[in-house]
Image (cartoon, rainbow, N blue to C red; front, top):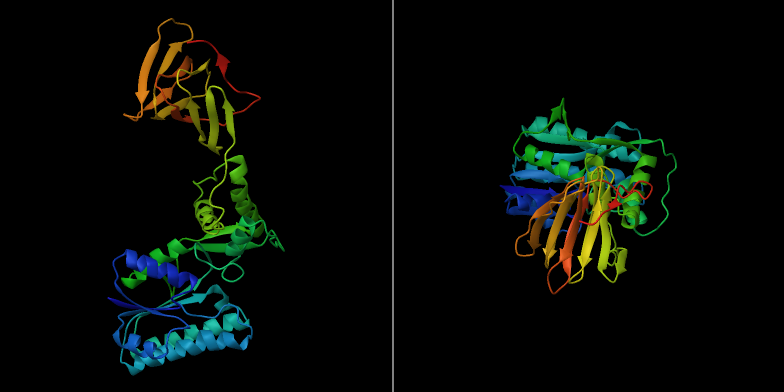
Length: 369
């Protein structure tokens, strides 16, 4: 299948083309505002499907709304008709097509033009009135407030929240691509004359700002956002895509002494925390037990032994561990336990605890194994 994508360098276009290539489509005709005009004639002769994504969002002159959103649509349809090409056409419109403003009017004009073309030429058309889109490769101060918030917060720049109670309807780019691939196979989600992306999310503007700020703060408090929330998961991926290229890394606080070090890596309110423990040769750490807290130990470098003893018994249980055989050791409550480095190099252990450390209630009691 030969696919024409107008607006190929835009936010949706870049993501769509990448996904089409991932899906095995090889003949993709990319058309953008800097593409030579004669290419449009060539592409409209050959294409089997058209993703018409090109449009104008923020022109300097409001008159350019109609020129970009209606005028170019007319030019595209005339070329298809001239070349007797009845390829299905997918148009990205906007929920603002229902509003009485220059942008909305231009989008509605483009829709009406496409509907008329479909009737007159017996062509299948899919018109999507999209809400606020977000995701990687979107432009700050252009495509969406999500992009602007992510870009600015990642760089400690000011953001503007005029009314925190305003509710937004957001749609993630990957969900858009999933729906567009269905339309490509003539299986779009439809409601009357219009198509729609089934998965959207609602959030208030103030909550959106606070959520993205929490992503920034997670480097300090190490708290990973709640990935069970699908919107939070998608927003976090989007935020990371806006990190400055010189700011992908961040330092962790290492608690160092003569025995080695202990460093917290990440925390979650729901599923505890992950840390890394480094023990020097001959060092034993631990010798404590817990009422309820439980842990998992995984030695990834070096070799050692993990010992357990029920606090009211004398029997000692030993598990020998090393980098040669990665295995997780569960640390049950009610057993005092320790870990000793038996090798001649530092032993590195990844540790998970089922709850965040609470200095007011540490649930940790010293007792030699």
